[in-house]
Length: 215
Image (tube, rainbow, N blue to C red):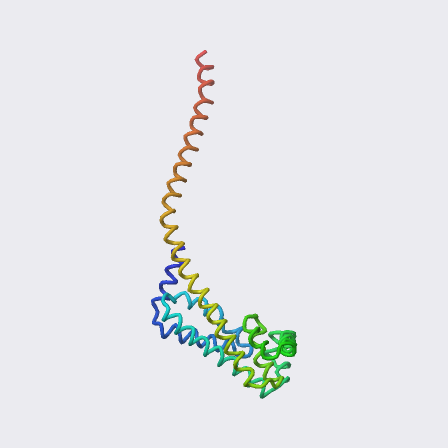
């Protein structure tokens, strides 16, 4: 546990602009067509969020991540607008699985712009929905509000989870350090009792033999 909190404290000690820059860049890449499987944006966000210990830090990271997520969505949208359904046969989509592209398209046909919002919280599909939305000629004026709403909700959720996880790890370590000595003392006491009982049993087993030899 100490190693975990030491790592979190080391991360928190990094310059906040650097943490924000890396997190924003990975988020943008994660939200762009297929790059999410190379750039671990969601994992990086959760880890970076452990450095959020104040409301101002939360708000700044929330803004940066939301803007980068919307930018990544927009890049994917315009790629889809430019290349259309030809993206389905691209190397990236084939690697991700063409069934995910089809699923994204089906979701858009059923939900329209709402699919862009809901897909933000769905793994794999969320990296393909923006491009699929562009390929399906969904109007950008409908796409953008849904993208913003999804990005704002998604980033707030993950920053909140990461921040709470970081605080919990430190709390658990503080409790563990206090309890550790009690557990150690208990283990020593139990071990001593076991050793003493074994010695008494051994002594009792030896006594009859000694009496027989005397007789």
